[in-house]
Amino acid sequence: MSVTQDLSFVTLITNASIFVQLVLLLLLSISLISWSYIFQKLFAVRAARAMTEQFEHKFWTGGSLPTLYQNALSNRDKGGALERIFVAGMGEYIKGKASYAGKEIDGGALLDGARRAMRAAYQREMDVLESHLSYLASVGSVSPYVGLLGTVWGIMNAFRGLANVQQATLASVAPGIAEALVATAIGLFAAIPAVVAYNRFSHDIDRLAIRFESFVEEFSNILQRQTR
Image 1 (cartoon, rainbow, N blue to C red):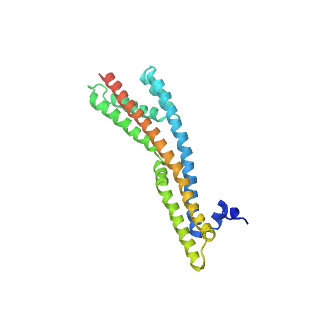
Image 2: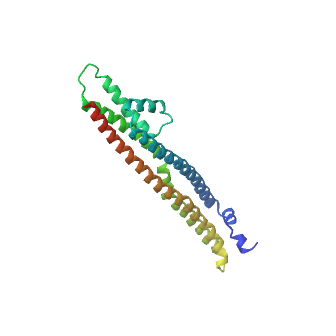
Image 3: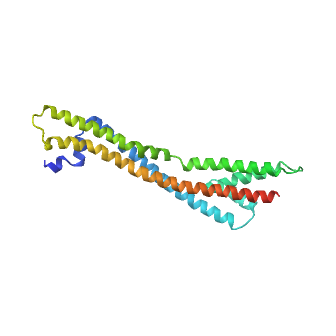
């Protein structure tokens, strides 16, 4: 075989030591899981943004709140995060108002209950949106070091192999070092997409969180005016 064939990517992996091969297998597994989470999160964030815009349009274009609540309640399983936050707040407001039948309404307690229900729903929705982000962050920070571990181990084996060679040349040490450097390359291959995806999704989710929080405050003001 020629030198190019001996140093091909597949040959370097197959000729690497068992430890380096295990490191490569671990990094490839991590990368595959990372890519599956990236595509899942990509579709989830896009859907959440689209449904948020759709519900905001329905909410601010007018119509009675009870009608909007009934429509959202019947469509709760298919609705978006913001719609579920609205259902939680409006539902608590209606229940609280019904409990004051024949009594003087305590507006402050009524609004506090609705706001707490919306905040609880908000936290549940954010937990769903932020799921798997910590995994991507861990992959982005740890994978290069895992690859570096395989590289260091491979280089140690390459230099140990030179102990029995009387005259060391670049041709004799190059394959071993190249095999070791493959681990670093795979580590970076796993880390870079995870870091880019984490930063992008964190930015998009933060923007959605701001829209959710703004809606909670604006809807609370609407309920406050209705209570008065």
